[in-house]
Length: 286
Image (cartoon, rainbow, N blue to C red; front, side):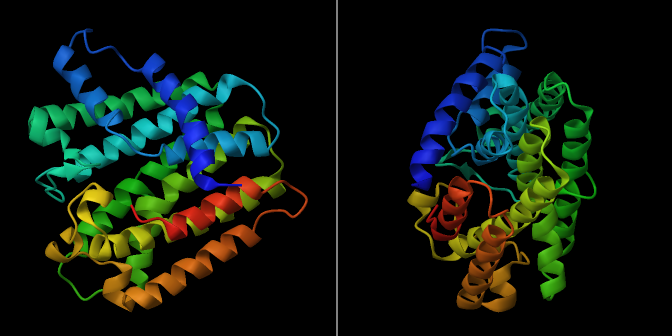
């Protein structure tokens, strides 16, 4: 099973749902909705919503009820990127090969677009009709997850990096939302406790590996292919896996995490899509 084909096929459906659910640019406030759509439709593989949809089907779900909550995960991811790129954070001017939101719409509108996407995401999560997924996602993106990870990231700039600090940053800032995406799908399909635990462990493994590869790509990737400025981690004195372990050891750690993630899945399930995506995360070049 080819990961690119899986992502392309599933992302096309997610894209249609996003177009259906997002406010139209002609709806007031026009500039805000334009800024929201600019970032949401700037590209990306829709990995988080695709993971939710795949987990839903893996756990036995078969209806379209998964799509609004799955789209919510993409809105949360997009809002986090908008805010991450701001001058007060990483001060990046390029994302997915395009000028970042604050470069196009100004800093104030970029902040508001992120806020609006965050709010809309919880509206879409509520459409799933399951309080558990709302709670799960809220925890994953709050002080014990994405936002907390961003704080740790800022606090760790220009200090001596350690294995403990870098793992804490990445588990919270990246792995938490990827794991929550899988859990949303599994919970929506009423999965068993065994399978929910398994998919959670898989998510932690691929989530941490994803960010390690991201750290490596920030050093070695082609900027045009990556779609964002390279070398920004070094420029900002970020605590990253290569800063702690070097590039080759970081690759080895990521590979071990990928293998552990795959082995965490129950052998009596069809795990082919998840295995392919795990390998794709390790091998990606952008």
